[in-house]
Image (tube, rainbow, N blue to C red):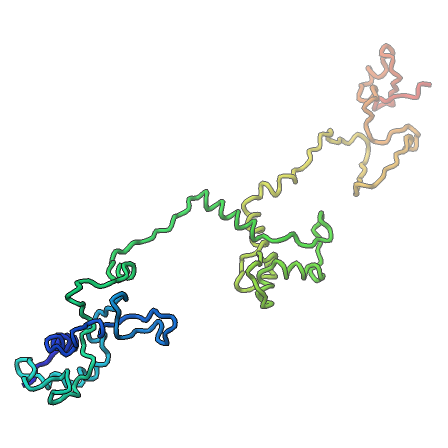
Length: 323
């Protein structure tokens, strides 16, 4: 009757039986594994069997994986078939030496490389690497969250860094610019990230795209023009501050004569003849603010004590010729 064992139990049993049999020769370090640190060695940096007392021992979590040379035999079940019903080796069977009845189940070196020498009681272990393996403390790094003022500062720092050069205006005052000129093409090459990306150039030092018509898919609504129109919606009071209407403080015009006159354009000239009517009276239909006779009734108009040269025409009072 055979006994079922796990792979780890079988590998551990092999190691213990190896020690009990004494077939390992009494020196564990010749079966222990280490990493070759000799730069001149052809196995430099690789796992090798045989460790000096001054070298660090390589320890595996599992005996099964520590000795891959035993794995085929364990997986095939050779070890379990060779054991007795009580899980012990037959007395006449030595699987670790040349004298056993079936010496091919396992071969040298025996599986004892995971053990530490009892006479020394210690082994040189790299404390830094050991701490990385056994330290289960988990620390959560919480990034510092910027406050509102810091975010505003960061925004302007980034804007000043990414806004780019002033484009090559033909007229600085009117903003006239030739988008087809070589100067503007050079400006795009040195500034516009959309143009630089579409041209397959290095965009590590690129700046904001200037116009919405120049943006590529990666920079949709990420242009200077987009910022300008967005800011306009929030600063209309500033935008129209200098467009206030100039108030006209002149007196309102009132018709004083027959008919009217019309000036269609601001630059039109008007020639007024002082004797415009057929009676050569000089009445142009426009009130003379210095004419003291205008507006007087007949009694006041003909009053000789006021020293005015007023004349009455039967209806209105007007300044006479003084003759």
